[in-house]
Image 1 (tube, rainbow, N blue to C red):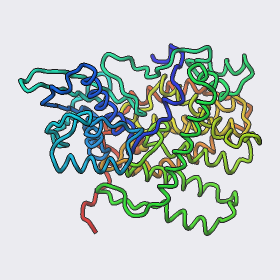
Image 2: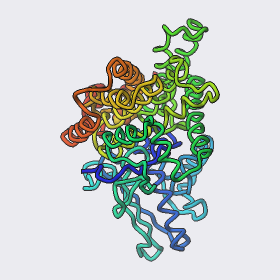
Image 3: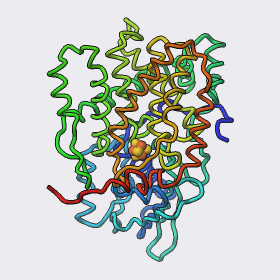
Image 4: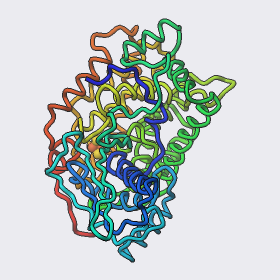
Length: 468
Ligand code: SF4
């Protein structure tokens, strides 16, 4: 059972800058491929490589085409990382690979390799995790130079077979916690808010200025993503022919609600979630929160916290609300990562959108002045009513139901926070119990509903391939 060790995950492990459309199927494989070529460089064998084999297993193979997994791997092999590559550069590099049939390993060793060379084994699931990937490099005499199996375990976390599931690199600190109960105990003993505990946890490895700068950078990337989503028109990539709606909604909303009447708050929250997830679906720059598919919920609810609550902001520090929001959400998200899973391939959408809604609900409750127990209650409510949520993306694209689901779940998070604040923090089901329930529900869930696009909407809604 995970969760015995204190939580060492940093808020910066949960919130990472990457590219769409999927943290586990795009960001993770790209990181794994980049790690592989970096290992070859470290071993001094990179110049000897003349053959390469990449095998994808389980969910990674089943939805590779819709999730952009194959181009992500090609970019990773060329030494690109998801947090720094620019969209234009991505397109140029991939066009060059398609034109030449070659990738330049680590940017320097050309080798014949293209998307079609990546072998997919959707029916073979490796025992460690449904998202498995093996890369093998050989010399011109057929000698194996290096082989490694990676697992993309959700939220952009990647581990090898020999590495532990715990992805947090930081050591335990006096402010580490292994359960919501321990987190509440820390807040009680030191008379702190949940965000204060998480901040102290971060300060064990970073200066206050660095924590602040990095959190505000994440906030700014989220907002930039929202703005890009609003600025674009047309169709999302893929055969579904899903039309972008954010721009149209924005133009109508700004006309109907120029003065930001609170009556329109829900519409703006929906818009932010829609814009971020449309941008994710088109492979844009995104903050995993805690995954790409669920990336619109935290920005949407944070937008609500900043613009509609009238609370939480330190008058001397207008950025205080966003910082505390992200710290509280990170504290809750670390519990899901450690005690259950944030991988749709492992536990279904409850682990992605459900976790994000829970994180956002707790964070909003704190901004609204909730006690730590009310915050824990809000997080619990949002997950309790996300239990069983399946992952069944049509055509394997992170579009339907994903985009609207983020907007719906942002609304759920706001409602959960408001419900929790009506109580005094006492409640029948604890956050720890609901996290354990999410984990066991995910274990019981049929594989069809765990990011394989073989059940639910993915098989009941025909994809019209006719261009119109
Ligand atoms: S259904 Fe949920 S878990 Fe599955 S791809 Fe969409 S957002 Fe991710």
